[in-house]
Length: 239
Image 1: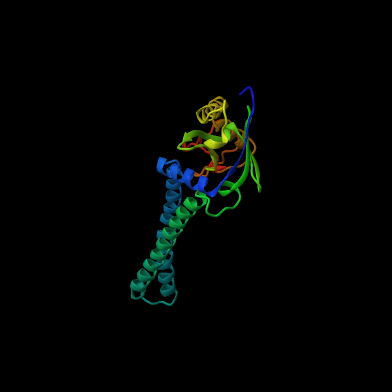
Image 2 (image 1 turned 120 degrees about the horizontal axis):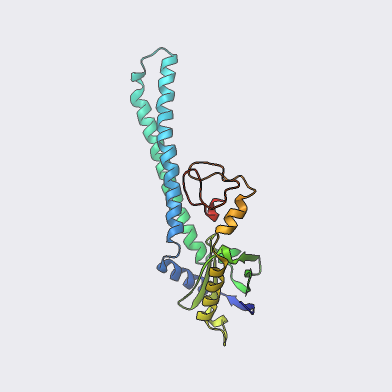
């Protein structure tokens, strides 16, 4: 990118609503939402049976210390354990539903807070090293390996980072000779030249103790973004 690109514009809530709905229709957040559901299910699978076994075991031990036949309280233990498991299931189902609604609401700009839901004056700058973003509350800098992709969608050019942050640029803010397609293409070329997020992951692991999310192996000093113990790929969200 020989010449930096700077755009100044005003982002409205209507812009955010339209851009977010376009992304949802496109499926741009499906992976993130699926990961949320998987994480909640993994937690439920761990704590559900654990709570069941702990409740039954506690009542059996209680009867054993009292020298009473444990089978007398076993039906009660099973009922209590099943109730606890049911409550955990309802809790995680409600939490996942709330998380999904919150993500959609935030990306629709209805909260009007800082970050992805921010409205008002916006300044973005693209140069060879990355993407800068500034609104009335925050200022952020994303190196190109931290940007997942840029695309022209409907009446917008949308940048999405690996942390699932969405930066919206209305087509009306892009003036000739620059076009929306050229802006998205220029950003895409810069992302491709950056070589992806893997070098940043390896650099972070060089001097940080990070456990593998799958097998808990210490990933400090590994020379590639893959766990040498179980083979799981290491992503930015794991750091």
